[in-house]
Length: 112
Image 1: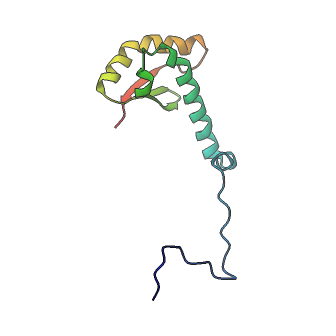
Image 2 (image 1 turned 60 degrees about the vertical axis):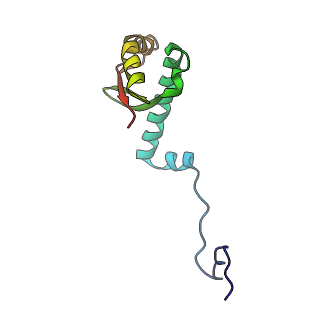
Image 3 (image 1 turned 45 degrees about the horizontal axis):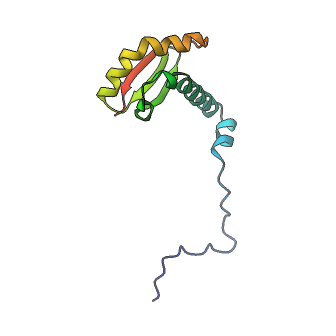
């Protein structure tokens, strides 16, 4: 018996495997996923607006999180980064308000 690492060849006449759907197309085709895609884009947009207000290389340790009707969450890599973000929170919220973004409330959570 010969052993190979290659996957077995498909059987002739078997079901064809469809090409994978690009994520952007899948998001657009499903209402719930389309909303999720829009929320992700809005979270990224907000991150781009507040990033200049973060000191030094701190942006490496902060990620945009979920957004909902109550506010937006920033995810801190650790407790020290979260503490600094809490100090900056009024400035970050002011930047969002200046752009007319509502809700402008920023929540800070340590990424777990």
